[in-house]
Image (cartoon, rainbow, N blue to C red):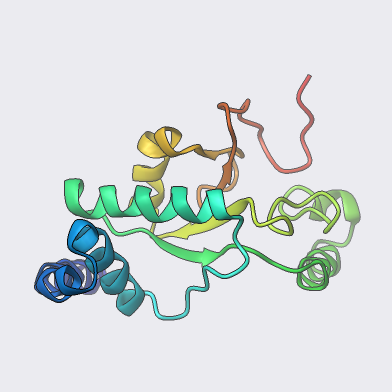
Length: 171
């Protein structure tokens, strides 16, 4: 599994490099940025960036371009914007799985509280990409906010206090 992940990462980086000349034709001043987005789109074909707030989309795409070109790190989006109905379905499913609203809230918030519904939250992968984003994402306003969710980042104008889980309250 580790070898497969490394091979896919190497192939994705190679594809990104090979796409730079084509991207240059489309946007001479943005060739590396475009090539990175295209290569990551091929590597993570199921990701959906639609619905993210404009500032979140800009922050995320620029952060992952830096990760890609500077450090050879891939960052894919597992989940971004969710409409209220989808968030409600996920929350209800977690309530059913855990047996209580209180237990469910430790992993998923209801739609009226979730930043995913406003397009301000991102769930990313792989773990190495999340580690990179945790270290460098603050430059882009992207912060890991919960100890129990290595994959979850939110767009904020200032670094938030890290909470143990989504239902924790800042004192």
